[in-house]
Every structure is written in C-alpha cells, then in structure tokens.
Amino acid sequence: MKRSFVASLALTCALLTSTTQAQSKTSTPPLSYPPKLSDGQLIVTDQSPDFIKPVGPLRDGVTIAKTAPQIDFMYYPGQDYPGKPWSSWGDGCAAGTKYFSAISDHHSPRGTARVFEYDTVSKKLRMLADLKTILENNNAIPEGMNYCPAKIHSRVDIGSDGWLYYSGHRGSPRTTDDKHGFLGDWIFRTHPETGKSEIVAAFPVAKHCLPCSVLDPKRLVYYAGTAHGTDAPAQGVQFLAYDAQHKKVLFSGPDGPARYMLFANSTGTVYYGPGGEGPTAPLLRFNPDKDQAPVPIGTEIGCRSATQEVGDGIIYTVSRDEDATLWAFNTKTEKGEKIGTAVVAKHNYITTIDADPTGRFLYYIPGAHGGAIAEGSPVVQFDTKNRTKKVIAFLHPFYQSKYGYTPDGCFSSTVDPTGERLYVTWNGTRSPSPKGSSTWESCALTVIHIPASER
Image (tube, rainbow, N blue to C red; front, side, top):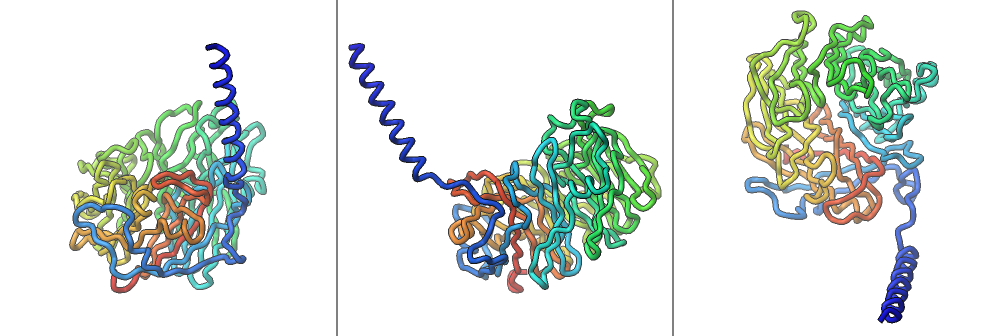
C-alpha cells in the first residue's frame, strides 16, 4: 500500500512538472517598454460600429448612442521601464486646443511623475515636466531625505498666468516617515509654452503629501487636501490654502478634503466635505477675501468628483455610494439637489466627471479603479436637462482585440472648450485579461470626437 502511494505521488509530481514546463513554453513573453503601436505608428484613429455594442446588460433607462464616435488612441511616451504600475491618479484640464494630464511610475521611496501636453492640432503628446528632474536640478531634496514623489494625485490646473499648477504624492505610505527623512511634499508649476518648471512651495504642510487640489485661476490660490506621513505632527487630512503668487500660506488646519473639492470661479470660493469618501458630507466654505477659516454652510452632498462651475452657477458632483448619486450644487444659493444616478450597469466608482461648456451634458467613466472592462469600458453622457444616461462608446473589447490594449480605469478626463471632444487618460494593460479583471501596467490616451448628433 505504501509503495503504491509513493509511486502514485511520483507520477503526479511528474505530470505536474511536465504540465508546468509545457505552460512555460507557451506563456506570454514579458512585456517590452516603452509600449508601442505596430509599424512605428504614434497614433491610430478608428470609427467602428463595435464602439456602440454593449458587452452585457445595462440598467433600465440607459440608452446607447446611434452614431459611433471617431476615436484617436496613443500611448503616453516616457514609459521606458516597468512602473509599479505606470498609472494616472490626478485629473487633468483643457485650454484652447491643448489637454494637460499626468502619469506616474508609482515607485517608492523614490519615484517620478510626469506632466504631458496633448495638442489637438498636431495630434502629438509631449512631456512637459518630470518631478524627479525638477527636484534634482534644483537640489531640492534635503540631505537625508530618501523620498521623491511617485505620483501626481492632484489636479493639473492652468492659471490665468499661463502656468500649470500641481503637487506631489507618495508611492507608498510606508516610506513617508522619519526613517526615510520625509519632510513633506512640493507644489510645482510648469509653463507649457516655454517648458520651464519651478517649485512653488516646499513642505507647506510638514510631513504631509498633497494628493487633492484645485486652483483658483484668477487669484492663483492653490487649495489642497493632504495625506499625513507616519510621523507627521498633525495627523489626519489637513486643508491648505496657499497663495502661489505671494508664496504664503493663507490657511492650514484639520478636517480637510481627502479626495475632491468644488470651486466656484464666479466667486472665488472653494467648498469641500471633510474627511474621506462617505456617501455625503457637510460642506465647508472658504473664501480668502471673507473667511479666516473654513465655515460650515449647512448643506450636505456627496462629492467623490466634481465638474467645473458652469455658466448658471452650478457645479455637478458624483457621490461614492451604491448608485453613484449625481448632485447639482448651486453656488448662488449654496444648496444641493439630487439629479439622478450615474451607474449604467454595476460599477459605481467614478473619480472624474466633466461638464460640456453649456452645462447640458456630463461625461464620466464608471469603474475608475479597475473592472471597467466588465461593462465594456463605457464612456457615459448624462443629460442634465432630461436627466437621462447614454453610453456614447464602449472601448472594450475593441482596443484589446485590435491593438492589444485593455483600457480598464480612469482618473482623468476633460471636455475640450468646444464640447466636441472628450480627452480620457486610461490606466490599463497590454497583457491578455479575463473579462472583468486586469492588472494595470501602462497608460494610454483616447480623444473621443463626440458626434454632433449625440450632443
């Protein structure tokens, strides 16, 4: 009996070894960097009926566009080595014919993040800034500080002075401590026309990173919500108002916004809910011309992401809750109203939402942190007048089948000033992925040309 068992075990081991060796011979080869399209192409353009074919059931009332959009696709340059992973975490902005965004390598304790410009006219992506290079060229990392920001988790916003403003964030919370000499993070700015980059402020909140932001483009006040390092004297999310023009802190204190803020350009007022990502939060208001500190306004809404203020004084937000509740916040009355839900199938995590210039249409992508492919990586349009939802494009499995790329999550999207194009920065992978699951490793940009009949 014992001899028979041993023989059986040996046979099983031999079979397993043979199977493993056979699998290794047929396994997918390691990915090469940088990601490339075939035949040396830097950009490809498609208009396919597959863009308006769903991959599964949608919720009642959700419609699909009748006309497929034309879509430009390209990889971000500079992804010359494996990231951990290469990914995008902060929202971008558009000005004129340009779209500005950022991607990061997520390495820790020393990583890097980069700012890019896409030009609609030339159809080219170019790198404007590299955080590691900026800091090294300015000898800005103090001796003994083993840290370099591995993410731009903040917004990339453009000021009235023509500069882009943004801030650094860590790759891992385990490296923002005294052991690594962590002192805090930086606010940066980059001028797209000259290519010049500068450090606006170093460590404005001691031993805190700066993952959340919005810029007052007129006053050049940089608002931030922080993430504390392990040994920071002030724990918890802090709220920072920094005057980038006069290089001074206007306010710094507790109960700041962890993820997103609402900014009313008409009044120069910022609003936010303190703390994390709950379904709703009581809003605080801060206007540097009127307030010494943030003031409660007695209104509670949800805000995982927000649009810019549109002409009638409305800012649209989306909650982190089961139905991804959509809200309309009136900056004149400082009241909020539920206007619908953003979910089109199952995914409810939405980290970037944009309004067209008229305020009629909102655009967003569910499944921000991954899993979007389970629903076809849908790009959704919400009609604020009729309060209806329409998918204007499904990007999966088209791009996986034709170009070997799976777009599976998004933290940055922006409508251009004409309302004709939607820029989307994707987190995704070039590895074959089962339905509903993927591991990010590279970033790509799509420019979705919204048909006139669909807007």
